[in-house]
Image (cartoon, rainbow, N blue to C red):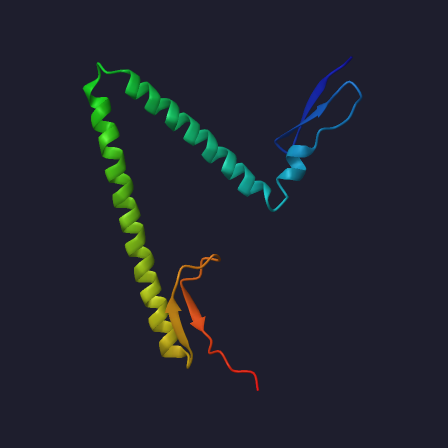
Length: 128
């Protein structure tokens, strides 16, 4: 049973005992959803490490700085969320003003599943 590993364009190709090449890393990098799956995996790993650190901080009561750090983290998150909402609101306002100035249609600001800042309002016409 021989086992060989070679490097090809900085990607490892592994030859097993049946001399089959494992090209999954190469092909997966070209799939459109792979990057999103990779990001989700990274975020899940970060969340797991964060929870582990929080559990360690909660279990160590002899460090008074740990409780201060835990108390500050929600404030920082709220501040970031508020700043992000203000930024989005400013972008929506600018997009709305631009649309009203350059179009004869009517637009509203509305959260969109597709990330649109504004949506056009289309009148309903009665069927004749």
